[in-house]
Length: 352
Image 1 (cartoon, rainbow, N blue to C red):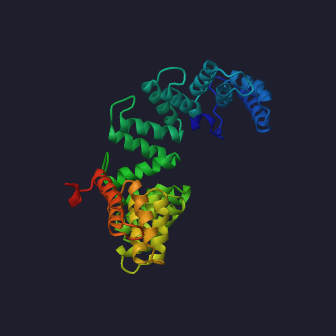
Image 2: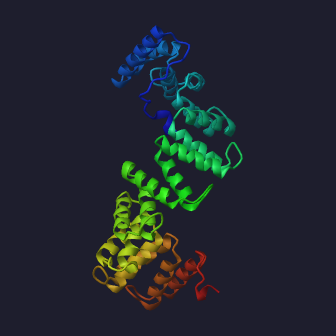
């Protein structure tokens, strides 16, 4: 429901039926309401918003919809909120159309209506409201309110990106990278990911760009640049990026081996829920790589990785209990962990 509470557009859309004088008056009343709102005087904002809305000021009508939806300055009323959002949308407010798209997606006043939701999001997107372009793309991709159309989804994600929605940029890049819904274009995907990362700090995009740079897709291979972007994503707590750093630094790329950095990155990825990273740091601790040898600490990491669903971690933990590595031997616990490894889909010889 974030769309119902987000800030208003700076651009003001005036209904075509208002005269120039009325349009000016509508803007003045709207600004008066905004001033009262910004002072925390919701009650005092309602009257100028109502006057501006009567003069067909789209964003004033939307503000009244928000007020009735929140019950701020007026009594809470969903019918009133919907009516004001409807008028605002008809007057050309992309934000109000988006609000109605969300409204019917969640079934705010009753059952969901996918077709209505799609209609309002499509209109909002056509009015330049980026978030609705993203919703429209998701609906086309998932077949919500319409038939699945991957090509349309790709086009809508591209439009959402062009109008400033970061998540749309990421999805657009992924579609181009994978050749989904159209031709594969790794070069443009790489550029899209990089922009979303640099301009908006979007962690998945930072990771995706790093991955393309590491593998030389869409441009030259550059391990240093890849690591730089993985680190940006890892700092934003994106587990897969931390894991990539650990893999590269533990020796997957010649000249970049650094067990200290690998152990640190794997440790963070493990904390963030990446099971294979728990296994990796456990192996480094068991061998004394990147720090002191610590068999008990290694077992803790293997156990944690197992709890995150990594079968290899379960197997390593079972081996530790079998052999008494960092813990007293416990064949019962070892058997339990072997069963866990098998339940996670791995085909160890003992699974048969």
